[in-house]
Figure 1 (tube, each protein chain N blue to C red):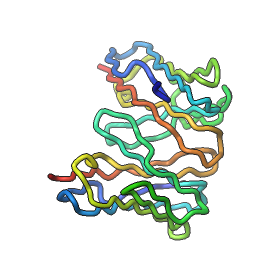
Figure 2: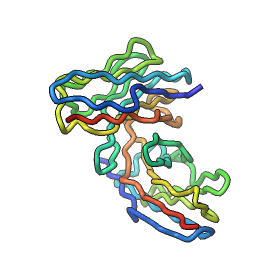
Figure 3: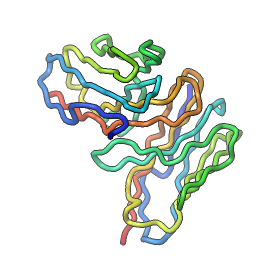
Length: 114
Length: 111
């Protein structure tokens, strides 16, 4: 009964490949996010979707494309992977955009590009 | 641009001692501030959420204060236990629905 679940948890892939990370939340939330945690452990927002609509896109390369088929899912597709894409990617959700609600995070997806 | 700083970056205390973790932010126009805990190889667990209109929040041994005007929040953990060892992150939520995170404080509670 995990609230925010993302798969895969670990992913090792070669440079130039295309990969996807999937995220699903069963909390009935309207807003979902993708965050990236780099090697220095800083967490930065990448994207935010509210009811399947993109509301935040933080200067992320075009190689990263989020897709939200419905408000319970927000998948992250990455084209032409580069070494610098190695990081932990966290999916998260909250009840509404712009509100004071708690944000719930998934367990993270560890991406290593070799 | 909002910047969030957490000092110290790492903290080691003997079991039973109280923990004091500091968080400062540069722009006081925030909706709320949230404290998280992150265990190695794990995701983030929300500990406390303080709305901008509140001064503090408490949950069990945890107490978080917020002084919006001075751009500061403090997380107190009473009577620390080895199980409290983790990285603690604070994050502020501002206009645009963005969470801006601090770099975290890595805590080690020694038995």
